[in-house]
Image (cartoon, rainbow, N blue to C red):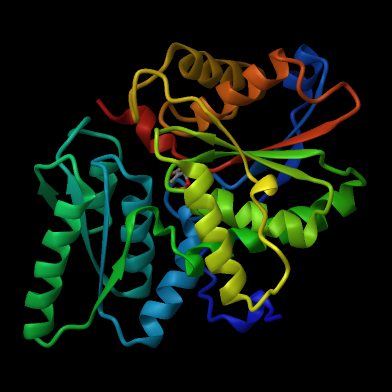
Length: 319
Ligand SMILES: *Cc1c(COP(=O)(O)O)cnc(C)c1O
């Protein structure tokens, strides 16, 4: 098996990110809740995409890329963080975004501050977005440029390595704290974070269940399985990737990127108990999903549950 350190990586994030017990919320709920602060990543407003970009942009650089293209919704955290990381590396970023949903404020402001070129495509389908990206990359090549393509969310096996590595980080921190986590819970939007964490849990956190809370209605059981397989192959790990390892719940509310009452309540609850901001699109809904699981009696008083805070605060300012 290969080591994660065998893959080129640009140290863009400040790692390890903090991991600690949510004392007030744990007391209120009568459970043991911990948080992994991947919102505190030292780039822009932080967030999970930085861990993926450390590997993806290292690959881009090794291929001589001078411009990186990625896709997303108009408030994409991934696109914004790609712009931030590309700026730091002296690469140009072109963000091709779906012209749907909230088109002002939030991450769109940050995209411009980071100097990215933003292009909108008026469509519901990523096929159209990718078609436009193909055309743009053709043009760039004709101008003698070297573009690098990153799909939505950076959810390809190379990006997933970032979260295999996060699971390893969690294992080290758990040992330092003297706790064993029964479950780690994370938001799932394009599947890469969950796939990486779930494969990483198999490797470094045996006995820890990885639970993903889907925030859109894509079939994440399938998506995560395929990404886990691809990532295992990349690592030349020949152990089994099993469907039994995959635990997906959904908290979509009225729709992707549309706030839900439970998600909004979760944003306020974490802010008012712990002074920590989650967002209405991903982490607020994931926390709402976790609170729902606790209400259903999942995870007892003796069990330790880790919530992986994947970032997203920019969405709180989208108008
Ligand atoms: C992208 C994102 C997620 C979901 O991660 P995926 O790897 O796309 O499933 C979760 N939280 C935030 C804040 C994100 O930006």
